[in-house]
Length: 280
Image (cartoon, rainbow, N blue to C red; front, side, top):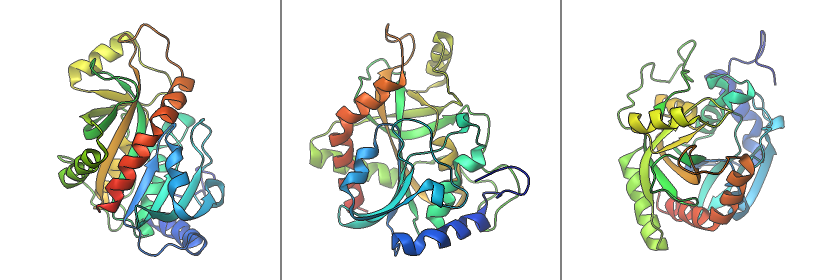
């Protein structure tokens, strides 16, 4: 699917067309939430009952992810006894997509009826007490991608200037806490900072991010949350801390480590999300 002249604008009308194209194939009725699965966290898709799948390449306006750990499927079914939509993988801005394109799947799941968005990602730990495998509830974020997914013409039904004072709903954070307690799982809480990537951060950049108040750093999520808030969706988010950020650890960073830690933490992550959904 192209994004150049004559291609889709990835706005509300395109989102409705994409939703219409997959609604019957996915059997969508009334999803309580849409869930975005980040790097190494795709195992949750295997827990969905009565799952129906559509590859991203068959959805108008979508793109097949080219990053390991991202399946590239939209999935419908039940999780925790509730109907959900899963976005198994992302297409990222560092792959050459605009922020508007990166956030387009959120517009589509909203057009399919989802009013709650759960975002997940793999992130580097800036806070020195974080350990690989920790799960951090995202309490807030910092956008250092220097782009907004609302750039362009205002879309009908979206707030032009959305309030971002509480992008991650306190009500949903409380539900995550309840789900974690039921599981005997200790959750972290902190601020996620989104950078464009695809390079990992320099030592100086990590020191800067620490001073700015960031606890974890990654290359996604922020464009999706901005669009969700403009659409009036409630948002919850969890970062899987896969590695200490540059300079905090003395080992080199690589994506294989991200996927490996995701696999080790998948049982805790999947249990948390399933319990969270059952409480919605």
